[in-house]
Image (cartoon, rainbow, N blue to C red; front, side, top):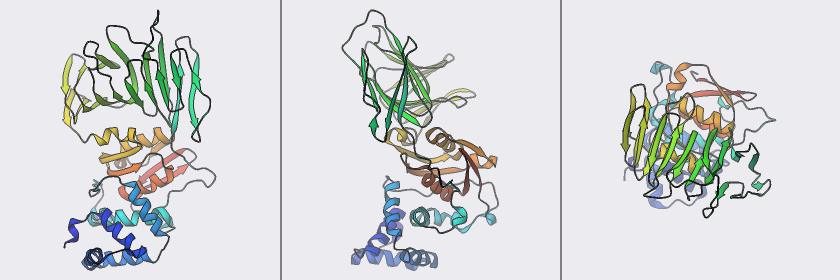
Amino acid sequence: MKTEKYTSKEIAHLILLCIQGKVDAKQRMVLEKWLDENELNRRLYEQVRSHAYLEKGIEEYLSYDSREDWKMVKRRIRIPRKKIQWHLWPYAAGIILAIGLTFWLTSDWKKDRVVQVAQTEIFKPGSSKARLVLENGKTIDLEMVDGQLCRQIAGEHFINDGRELTYNQEISVEKVQEHTLQIPRGGEYKVVLADGTKIWLNAASELIYPEVFPDTVRKVRLTGEAYFEVAKNSVKPFVVEVGDMEITVLGTSFNVSAYPNSNRQTTLVEGRVAVELQGQHVEILPGQQARETEVGLQVAEVNVKNYVGWKERRFVYEDKLLGEVLEDLERWYDVEVFVMNDAVRDLHLTANLPKYENMEKVLKIIEYAACVKFELNGRTLVVRLDRQ
């Protein structure tokens, strides 16, 4: 039996079983072969066994990665190889990342690399919160605090439960009113429109929509990022306006990212959508993305999980630019990121992280996986290459 068939996550699980005294003969043989491969394996194993409290850390690691196989972390670092520490070797991206990372999350080992966070302030993740602006200018704060709804909100045509704003699907009005749902940094919210369409809005986003759709077309306007599950209606298309870009569907699931100063992109999960931009028209199929570029719209095959993981309460990154990851952190934890080295933005990160986790733990993972160092100064997050 060859250990190459086993993922780093599985090896981490075997070590956990061994610590707990639950490993069987077959599992012990696999673990022994892994230990015999090189001295680094055995040294790490001994370090793990010498810290009984690491057991909790391994279990925590297993919860961090929901995929069956966490592939090798890919990096593109613009510094000579001789300056890269041993933990950047390709080997380290497998087993070391799987087990050593939990050690970092639960121990004081290598204190010089631990994120410097003020003892008096814990950077908690975002939460369900939004502001509803009615056409008459009235504003209503929608928010959950410590899992509890601040106050139940019921309007003439909608009801709110602290996580979801739902409109009545069986109403008629003489004059259609426009509503605006604003999501602040550090927030997210779900809205169910009058036609049954479900929309999840990410942090720092805004959606403008009618409380009831007219007979001809269903149209909304978006800034920021949202995931749509459009109610099917073959005679009344659904249109998402993103500035001068239009996305037209009949019934489908897709993600739209249109933050200011970023290239707009539409990622299709199922169904079919058409995207129009300045006279250019493209149609995309499931697993494809239409992305705005300097030369117009371009269609490409993508890993859909990279673009919809946020809706499932995960940060899912498959070979994603660290610069884009940092933008996610800014919006979700409501911090300002200051990059000391331009090369940081061009690093690539592969990780699957819980979105509802305190920022300190998430930063430690990224530090280790991407070979960067974070420091916090108030609400400013400083990031630089780690050349130690």
